[in-house]
Picture 1 (cartoon, helix red, strand yellow):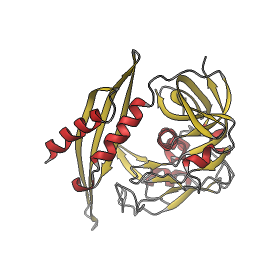
Picture 2 (cartoon, rainbow, N blue to C red):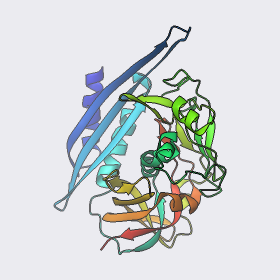
Picture 3 (spheres, rainbow, N blue to C red):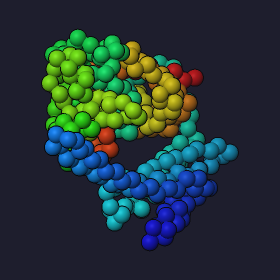
Length: 325
């Protein structure tokens, strides 16, 4: 059954568009983990989770130019996998970049696709860590209770998020996990803590101590930006000329988490007269994470159906620098 599904995915993706020449990547992964915490003081806890991931990557060609597009699907059971949907997404991402042009260097209103916005938040989530604060490696130090982002930004760490692949009842220090707002209407509510960092700052435990290698580090459970009311098409409305960013490369090499800056090679589409227009590629989008979340004009309603650690809907940012031709 599994082999047949993967073979079908490959054939289906190839059949959707004659410009798709090759399936370069087709992978199925099962992930399962169990955590037991037992000590001599009566603690006896167990949590476990499992999920499956199906990934497809295709190579497209048009007029001597090539483009690679990837898509993936995460589910908690095999029957929930929608291979036809995954094949369509892979095809769209592959062929949409064929024949992409360039864009003049300038500042533009920018729509960040949900996947791109999610990747950015995931890369910068360390700024909310009590460990980073203890080492003075976050610009949020000393700003608890202050407005740090726009009033339309509320970031929630929710261990029991309804759409989350992994739900977490306790952390790796046996502290119960609870839902909490890290940022509420733009106001920073406090750092994520382990037992060690909570003691250092004389603050309550937050149930965010998770093992990374041989250390317990403050980490989010399911970090979600509350969605807005706008469809993707409504985010484009009113933009005479702007940029839709659908893919970024070199994420960790192109940002400074402490300063909040990012410079990322990107691809996407022009937005003209409120509509998505021609594809563009090989441009660099630059900005500051704090400034960006202070200049979000509209928030989309397109949170992923399945949330894996971090999720943000698409965002319309008032202006970011685009370096192109």
